Length: 233
Ligand code: SAH
Image 1: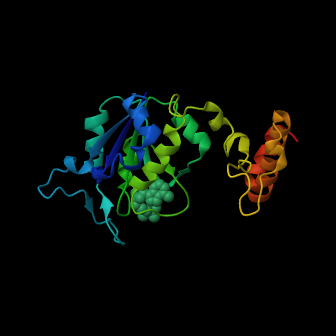
Image 2 (image 1 turned 90 degrees about the vertical axis):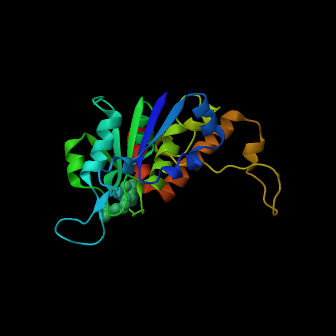
């Protein structure tokens, strides 16, 4: 079971897109759990302030260190081993291999930043891993947390029915997925490649691998390099 906690200023956004289909079912089957912590509840002043202007000046507001830190201390307490993630453009860029690694954990605490981000001292005093979704700026960590968790939850045992569907997907083995086709067999005068209708499984496998290799080589030279190094071609 993966216990997920979200530290956010917008609790009403959750579980949001994580509450559909197989993910909803998996949560009711206790494959994963979700606890939402409203950072604002840990503000000590009567206006429930969570942000302030940055020292040294500059645009926008920053999330104060004390409120975030208090929420972490109260909720996680001394269970120091728990993983704490801060979703941040400065973090290491998230990928499928990281998703796999995180899917093996028992706990994930996720801090969703807002405004211009959070006071640096929080990151220095707690053991927090910064994770970025990519080289662009979002308005808050909440949307990032949906993407982050979506990628992780589907890897938890028992969430997807067909384990093979995970093994053959893009980024497994550093290859992008081969093209796929379904009914109708003829559509706008186009038909699927003949080999897929042949019933010859070995041939189909070979065709798919060749397609994956060609597509990866053309579209993602970076992945292609990793693939050929690993496979010593
Ligand atoms: N001023 C910051 C950006 C703050 S964006 C900077 O220049 O680095 C506000 C919040 O949105 C961040 O605290 C973070 O939690 C979230 N966020 C924005 N872009 C993100 C990204 N690419 N990956 C993960 N989280 C992101």
